[in-house]
Amino acid sequence: MTALAVDLGSSSGRIVAATLRGDRIEEVEVRRFPHQARFVDGYLSWDLDFIWDEVVAGLREAVARFPDAISVSVDTWGVDSVTLDADDHPVTPGRAYRDERTTRTLAAYRKRISDEETWAASGIAPATINTANQLFAFLQEEPDAARRVATVLHLPDYFTFLLSGQKRWSRSHVSTGALARPGAHEFNDEVFEALGIPRSWFGDVTAEHDIVGPCVVDGLGQLTVVRAGSHDTACAVHALQRDTAQESYFLSCGSWSVLGVLRDEPLLSREAYQLGLTNEARGDAGLRPLFNITGLWILQECQRQWRAEGKTHDIVELIEQAAAAPSLGVIFNPDEPQFALPEGMVDRVLDAVSDRVGVDTLREGDVVRLVLESLAARYVRGMNDLTALTGAPATQLNLMGGGSRNALLCQLTADALGIPVIAGPNEASALGSAIAQLEIMGVLDPARRNDIIGATAHTIEYRPRG
Ligand code: LRH
Image 1: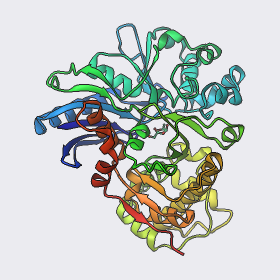
Image 2: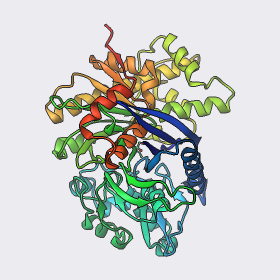
Image 3: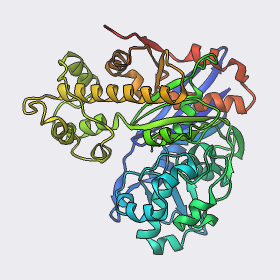
Image 4: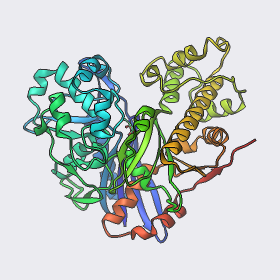
């Protein structure tokens, strides 16, 4: 039996066919497409129609190649949503979380609800990217458009709606937006009221790991649409081999570095708030308290700049050069807001260290090493904070997602942490989605999950050097 995972990241999307064969899952990437937010009407926006066309084309290709495909589930990056009019058409292009409108409206937002209140109301770290901030900015800056809105769907729920005709508000994605109570089992009406966001735009929070209904798209009628975890990191942690005797610490490494731990209850202490922790939900009933750290986006943006300048930008070559480059002995803090913005990233990175090291002669490999060492140092701080909050020391860190293919990053992280890094699976979100789908469809017994992950994920252990 084959499950189809539609895994949409903020720089690329993929459709993966995952077939259960004995004690392992065989994955085939049927389609992958790059995409990027662009300015429309002065706002950084996603091309939802382009993404949807790619998803449908990928799914049609997948059912042609895998006639035993039974299910499909969509997961996406966090916090973004789609505003729909009464006829269910998007009112504006899908606005992107990196747009600076939420910075412009932040002071007004904080007058309505302070950072402490956001944390107390949702268990989510206050951040300008949060869905709550984005909808507030939308109301402030585009009031005419806002008047035409009948429904707001979170991004994966929008695509699930197009696939199935069913509108829902999936818990794991909802949890990223600061609109729900801690634990994200229900929306927090007080937040809606304080910000003036019409509660009627949303229904109730929907639990996941459930069947949605038959796929209504032409040619895809054999598929059952399921909710295997709507947020990409929720799917990724479903592909984490769990040792119930120890805390499961994870680092999901893509454009973002999502560093967290699996828990049943949120971590809601004042210290957790001060450290910037955020309590997001899993696809099952559990939680994943974590730090959202600006991650390989910094490197992706450097590559974009180098490509435009006609310099080396191939990731394999860059990592080789970085591995051969000596450490500069300085780092920068990836949490600084300038690293979250698009464009001119190489200059920003160099600016951040130019008072401590000569930057004029630095080559691409030196910059890549500087970025990776800075990320590794940030992970150390994050792990120290997490273990202080849980009270449970870490014996290893499971580094999953695309970053697990970056051997230098894995090794530098193991060296900096002083504990082994278990790298893989690299397509963690797609694998987690597929496992959950097969479980939901009754094809796979959840008791076999750890063994299936072990047999499927080609993990590599990086031991700390020195
Ligand atoms: C990673 C991620 C992360 C953040 C961001 C917006 O893809 O989901 O957890 O929420 O996207």
